[in-house]
Image (cartoon, rainbow, N blue to C red; front, top):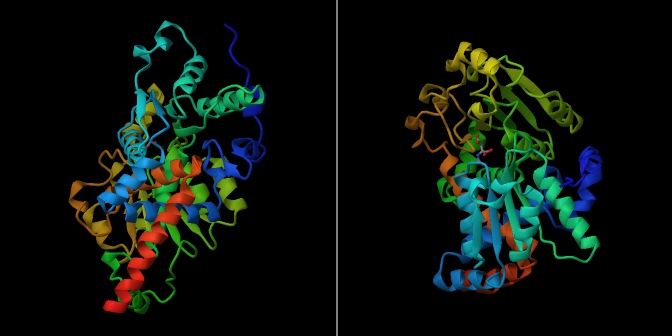
Length: 396
Ligand code: NCD
């Protein structure tokens, strides 16, 4: 069978692709983190917070679960996944959307030689949303073009969400990373004393500190070259003002900051610096994003080179955590290997388990947005909570 030809579309600059992934003024397919702007990130943040609030009661859960009970999702994950798969499934469940899944091509017709495109088109016959993760970097993007072509011919087509495409992109991980940071740098959570006193105390010690994502130093450590989460997140952080990024990685071509990403960041006025030990940056960063070395992409030669470098420079020991700023947060997309010892897990700076939970809220917000039920959530939230707050103010 002749494969579909998407090469000419795949080889275009990313800015030319973005309009095609939209429907009217809204996003239709979620393929790259480049599709998001600061306004969208704020909207998703507020929607996620509202879903979170509404979910606190049974009545609220029942409301949310009524929103998409007439739709179905297909989770097509032929590359390993724990958090992305489970949190997408949980997100669908929050919205009442039943899901089916294929996690292993050897139990689908791909084993008999069916192309992923035929499989995807079949899934679109049975479901209203396809969330996919594959080893092949451009498959989710190609599937979005296939769906758009079907649309042109008035044939059934559904939105595609990229849940991780090879070493390339992981846009929804970047969304949840941003959501986690937005909440951290508000300095308003229970951990931060809601009355604002914590922020005032911090300002005494760190006079330049401001709320929000601007004017921050973001550190990344580990496999910068092949980490799709780093690529997607670094781009989104570069949309904020006065941002500095420090990258810590072994001096090996495959693991270092790739030139295309570096140039993209510099173009967005980010101050970029590279280091070879965590010691150079731990006391300077507002956030430290740790990553594992992505050994699944190794060649034989890589394996030999990777044996030789000193791993100690890239391990976040409790001694290094102790040198971090009081309010700094430690993030990790997980899975981890040895780069964060479990002894760090109970430190209040360690936010990676909360970060993973945030993925469920952000993904439910994203799905709600894609199916245009976000305004219903906003309305329900204001009807439930605005009255509640006014009432409380009067009686307290
Ligand atoms: C990451 C991924 O799959 O890219 N994990 C995740 O989705 N939370 C990071 C990794 O595999 O290292």
